[in-house]
Amino acid sequence: DGQFWPRSHRWINSILTCAQSPPFGGETGFVDLITAQKTLDPQLKARAANATITASVRAIGDFRRGLAEDLDLFDDATHPMIDTWPGSKAQTLADAQDDRILYVGSPHMVVNEDSTYQQESSLLPSIFDHVTRPEYTYYHTWSPGDVVIWDNTVSLHKAFPYVNTPDIKRELYRTQFRRMPTPQHLALHPAPEDYRPRWLDPTDNISMIYERRLH
Image 1 (cartoon, rainbow, N blue to C red):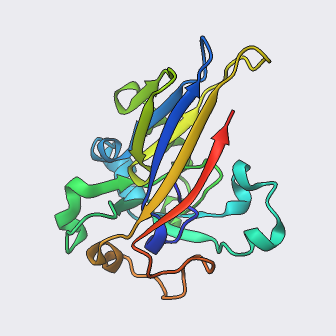
Image 2 (image 1 turned 135 degrees about the vertical axis):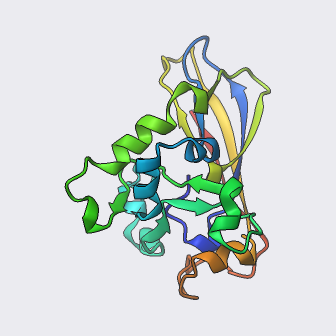
Image 3 (image 1 turned 90 degrees about the vertical axis):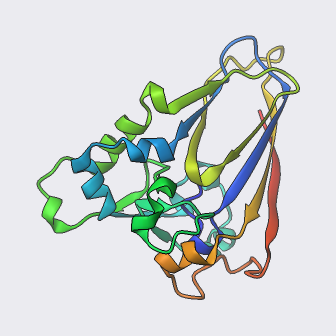
């Protein structure tokens, strides 16, 4: 997740803790994007390796009610569809085989592909069909007191529906923090120096982003 962040600031870790949980439903699903990348069909992998994704905060449901002046602080971000983990110290993509991520997230992302594949089927649905196979997924059923920590760059996550009534509540608290990618990771796909959130101090080693209450 976090494709709307520029490369220099997208290494986000998340912590989610449960205060109240419904008797059924409301699970959170997770996808392992490193293992999914390793097992991708060779033809799909070749296409993905030559593709990029572009993400915009304006296309993400969580931000649709944001003020225009706030959304304007986020430029659209473009990333390789197959990329290295931000903590990788590999000097080349060839040396980073075990660190590579199938970097996909929101279905609203724009996929930029070589014209060679214009006659092929759409790439993103095929990728999502692959990464959501049971062997790459984990579904967490919440109980009060549970704490789950994950790396946003190497996983997808999604909350599942539940019955929401005055007597049935799903109350979770989420905190996110940022870690700075290694110089080796940034050097593999350099971006302009000013390609970063304009409101954020680029010298921060760790920045707390936000805490919010999820119902």
